[in-house]
Length: 433
Ligand SMILES: Cc1ncc(COP(=O)(O)O)c(C=O)c1O
Image (cartoon, rainbow, N blue to C red; front, side, top):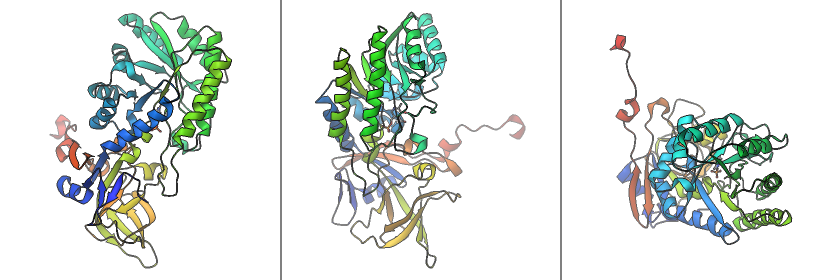
């Protein structure tokens, strides 16, 4: 079943953003990422509406999902803030028009240079360890700038997701432990520091979570810390519950019920505020995947096919784990169809391989597709998040191009890498020249 923002035209071709995807490939080549601008806007507005109807809220788009400048620009024009986790993401967000005051800087390792840039632009720094707090305090004093800080706490919430993207467990590398009192100690230390202004609290329990319950548990645990802070005389401006809201990747998966999520999370936050006599905090979320995941597809050419009696048919695409690493890395499922044969029966059991010399290089196993022939066009769905941003150049394959589509128009938003791009940074030592 196609998601509602796609269509199929009379030729049986997949249509995205009002554009025939087969024609897109003729114009821009393959492999090709395609981002649907309207879908990004719809996703942003749906998320904002669900929470914004109930509460003062800010959505800080997590650039790690897709840091393409055009994608970030779309969200900037919607009024989004940004969650950045490197200096360059910060620069991209600034370039897209998101002011530093609407950004949070996350991650367990921010270098001094990165912290300096964040300070210069008034970005809130989500501190991850005691040493980082000391560095921020020192830099703030040295530069005479006030540092806006919050602390990433580890609420010890088990999220039902892949272990590599579960981040809220006690043993995870992120944040300050709550149980041992480490989190409160961090706030106590910051309170005594000059040029450091405590503004919030932050947690992120993991990614690709489809069930509202872990978020409710997270809200409960974070608000308990907020209440304890108040007793220490520390009042916060915002409560940042991170990202992690998932999207359906498999046809049988259901969308997250955002209304239920918003209702349950907001009522948890409000109950604690009421019971402990606290003011209303600004609620911050850092959605990445939810905003851009299903707005992106990857188009790849079927180059060769192979038949072995009694086994699924193999097809080799010109995109694999180099262009989209999630299946190889997490065993992630991405739905696949043939973009030029959307009206044909999915009657052939098919293994979908990439082009690299690696057995792990596949995008799907044992999928039902129409019988694919050389020259057909495969479409891999839901790749707008953690697709191009995690792509690589293994076996010296250039990374794909990306276009943005909107109301029947298409524009290149990232050009395809070339041989020159691939070798530009290589140098020969003098003795080999
Ligand atoms: C701190 C933080 N915020 C937000 C996100 C975005 O997560 P998602 O794309 O699942 O919404 C991540 C993802 O790893 C993260 O680590």
